[in-house]
Image 1 (tube, rainbow, N blue to C red):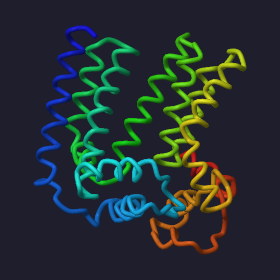
Image 2 (image 1 turned 90 degrees about the vertical axis):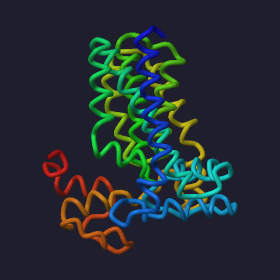
Image 3 (image 1 turned 90 degrees about the horizontal axis):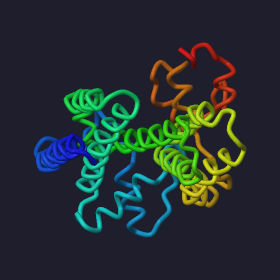
Image 4 (image 1 turned 45 degrees about the vertical axis):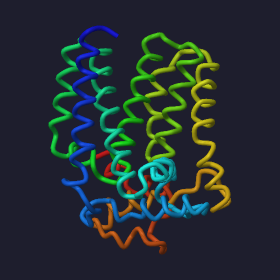
Length: 264
């Protein structure tokens, strides 16, 4: 770690600390205009009560981490908010590293600074939602995948890329889309590279596989495709997220019905 890295890390630490201190005043209670009412706090309470939450849209990594923090902080909302704050700081550091990795250190500095001053990013650093955590895990996955694509295809790097993908999927099911950059990163390489990435992803996602198998009888069960259906045909009608028959059911059916709209 050079001098610039230490300076950037110090600035990010100060930024994260400032949000952690100001969070209770700037965002003291959950907001009904965000995704906070989606049951994250209820899931944290259930996990702390040794119950297995049944959630068809969101995985349980974020509530599980929140439950661990709650044992220290003592409040579900405060712990979930603090988790988002820490994840936001991690995302800023990873943004800097990605910029430095692809271009020059100054690119990483500017990218991290612009992200830090974004009002949307600043807000989500205090929200009890998965946005900041998923962003950090996605950036970690992309950074490791980029290392593989540039020739660092050691088994440890490939497994680590898979671990980040599995953790991202365990935070939001749309994390499966990270398989796409993997296809480009390991193209033309030996099959063992694929197996190492897959091994890391399966190991990281194993707890969520077990929960889904217990709750639904399938390790990959999800109704998150209803979000896509809602955006395509429901005019943002949130009632489409309630279990009821739709014109198309399942990821492939929804995508096949309107492939161009999905790409757009």
